[in-house]
Length: 279
Image (tube, rainbow, N blue to C red; front, side, top):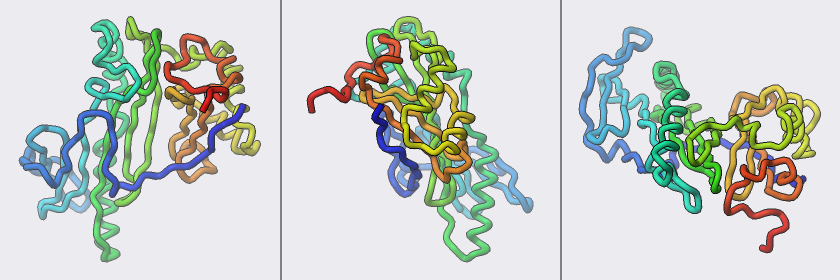
């Protein structure tokens, strides 16, 4: 098995969010409306007011002096999100869409607004004490299609959370649904091996990790960390799940003969390129 490069990732918040979904406007370009004064309590009897853009695409928490502490974009997807070469939510039957809606309705938000606001204010106080400029924090959650075939369609939930004013971390969770009914599969169902054997196969596939790191990966591995793309399968460990790694950690596996031998035929996405495909 030839694994793609093992890598770590960190996002820079000064970059524009890229998405195949309907874009949220940049806050500075929008007319904002005060929705609630003193919407959130902060340490030291401070308060944050809640502002909202005219299209209701994001909430902006600001101090009374106008300092922008935190912008939270409204969740986008799975509807109206498109990826080239992949079936979208809007292409599916009513039954399939209902099953997918039920799943993501139960999943809900994967972040805590209050906790993020408190962290943002703590960062603001630190910057004020150090005499440095505070960079507004941003939070975003979106659900996008990632791969499909005649039987199944895969989606990825991506949550972008701030680390500080300039950096962010991503949580990415995969889910696979029956294309006709919308029933969700366990990601272990994608494999022709029993769950325990599939776990060991995935952990052994890279072949280059140290025993200590492999042990961490085994302890942290969850089925939703398995992501399907048209040209590879990815195991994505969020930042903080592997004690020895500072950032997120991902392994990509090409759809070569070895991987195809342990995947269910119905789970292999359309548009894949195997290691033996002509370049």
